[in-house]
Image 1 (tube, rainbow, N blue to C red):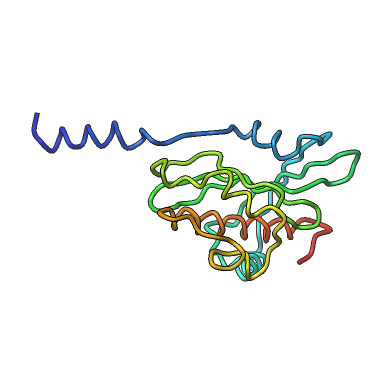
Image 2: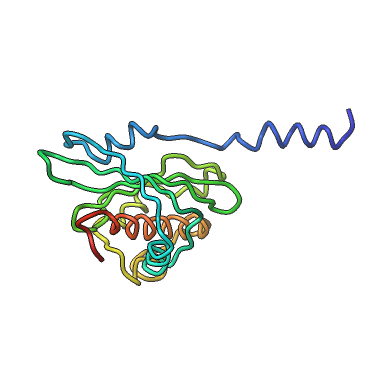
Length: 177
């Protein structure tokens, strides 16, 4: 076997060694809305105006125009909005669950899957600092959010995804910034 073939095999077998899925979509939605009577998936196909609005509000560039938001309801009342989205951290993706209350405040942020090396994964304790925060210019690293030593790209990606989720949830009927 030639050396480059051995290197290719080694890369193919070790690249995903640290890739992990922590929660399924079903488990994530149960965590997001534990007391909900029902959870409804709402597909949004954004207009150019909505894309511009979300990008301006979040400070993040959207990769597409189609998004699925999940709305939890209890006795006919919305109890929150959840977004499950994958985004690239450095070269590989992470998938986050971001849950916002009806008032637009972040209720929960959790990593559902992480494909970068495990030492760069934001821990739940760090993610908890988003709780209670609303979409604002301060919802960023160096603002209201503290960074993670040695995992700056992961922390930036999470903050960007939280801002994007908050801006997307504002598009739901009855919600305005």
